[in-house]
View 1 (cartoon, helix red, strand yellow):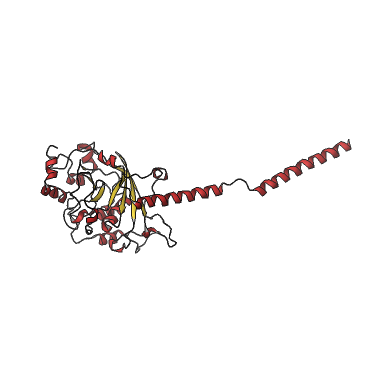
View 2: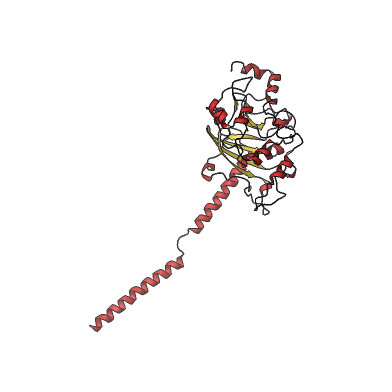
Length: 339
């Protein structure tokens, strides 16, 4: 794109680009909010069904210390993200839930603009309940000036105005320092591993009118077919796994337990240390320590159950063998005397 640099330098144009990144969905009325959608979905705590107060309502989360590590296998390689609820509670809740529910699996990175951002979040799921949830708007979170300027690897929502966040997310590239000031752009997480893979995502340029990349409307209407026929080189998600950690996932004894809604991260894959290129957080490090402690405990249990045969057992066997040998010798001597 020959005019890309000029567009990025123009502040007004850049703001216009962000404001139209997420199309409005006519199927969801403005009066609907995330709480009513979650009520309809009746998400329970995973104890066998039924309505439960543990539903993921934005209002019911009072723990700002929760984190989620999201490991995604993509056509471009592995990407690991760390979400922080303290940064953006509403955004964190929505993004984490959608990743846990597999909403982004098999979807494409449909907007890849080098040195600006990569955008995704139009799913091909056939689950009507999940689509209804993903299309419901969530409230904006307070701005986080302490996190500015926007850094490479930061993650946030695309939007079209105040309280317009739904399911579309973006990852910032190195030229996105001007982002984060719109109400819907409060970051909720960051890429901590695989940023090189994010930078290497295939790009057809920005969406029209700034480039010749795919448009959101046809993706929604035609699904994967539109991308595969017109933009076959675009990269996509394969499968993502989520692991939550924090006070809201502690049991009553104070131990960290895995959230029941999370897909377990493959143990073999998680043996690889998370590297953030200087973006590793203390929370991610603590998570890795806790995981290592659990793995060590499991290894110890295995060793304990595989101890050598107890000493007293060996003694009994030796005594039995000696008794058998003496018995045979005695019979042999008696047999000799008889002859």
